[in-house]
Image (cartoon, rainbow, N blue to C red; front, top):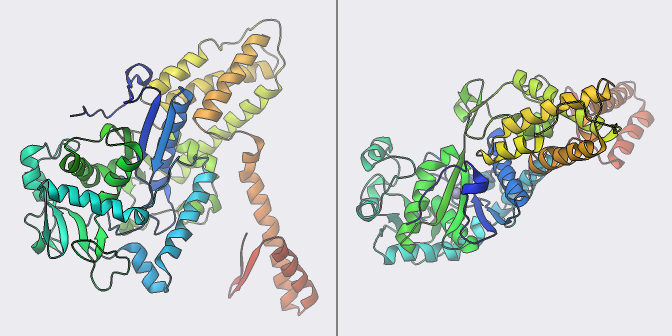
Length: 487
Ligand code: ZN
């Protein structure tokens, strides 16, 4: 059985991939039934950081991040209508239309955050055959049972042979106490048994044939199946948010052990959660802020728009295992920090070398390296870069000098750690907040003039503004209070 690690402390020395020089890494990706929010940004950025760092260390990394697009029920419920199906039913869309729409938007947001695309991005809906085969293996090994067309994991039987709950530190009694009565409980032997395959209710519009019923796979099944399909029966790293440890990842371990006789994952890594003004993000608090809302500033909890690099920097300022509390003030502080980095970076490119180095920059590369090795300690990397920013500013102000060799090294360290590993875009484009504001203000001004023209029945002016903006790619909508626009 693989030993489970759940941190990468002293990564460079202690991390041992299963295959020399290669790393297989699987991360639970988004459920594409709505726009990505801050809760999606954190795991995406955390594992992007790990991906970038492993590549920096010279590993060839195969990074698999899935798209959950079928049979995904709420994280806290085993039952209920698939969200994509529900949206499709309500809006009379083909379900894959909804999936594609939100997948495209997710990609757009990830690109804005400078999150690199994974090597493989498999869809659950594209792996139904493999999931059925995986369920059949578990049935063949005797760790699952069929009930009324659905297949359930026989957790009690499994727990006699394997340690169920080892990742989350739970035992069966804890789990019974946590499990709420839900629809379908009467089909199960025990409340803690989880679905490997679910018979579809008549209103469920995404379903596939299987040996047991016309239905869909249980949520945990896709990650066991696609992880092992693309990375092998055993692979190095599996990541996701802390909220996925139970039941999702615990169930994945059980599925692997039951089907394959051993665990699949060598290192589990979980990023901590983001709270908003001290509260969990949740429907009941009505505090989901989508990334698009951050970028546009259109949410009541936001004082202004925040660019994607501010979001990235804000998340990297905390260690991935710490909770992060979001507030507009905290983002404003992150924005100031990022601007200081951008300024230092711009100055660094323009600095002139002197005869000798009189500022303190020694050991910067080593500090960054050690911090990254210490379980991806990004706050320390950022602190080290800020210290060197002071030296850059001193030279810039003419109060110190830097030698040719040291200047070259300093530029290389910033390029490696700030740009390549932290993935910050520090070039001028991100002076953007001010630019974006000025831009939006100018469009609002133009459309205000158009509104005035319409009221004055000056159709020529009103049409000219509308047509020319439309030709430039703007979408303009008249509303009862005035207008809305987007690009
Ligand atoms: Zn997963």
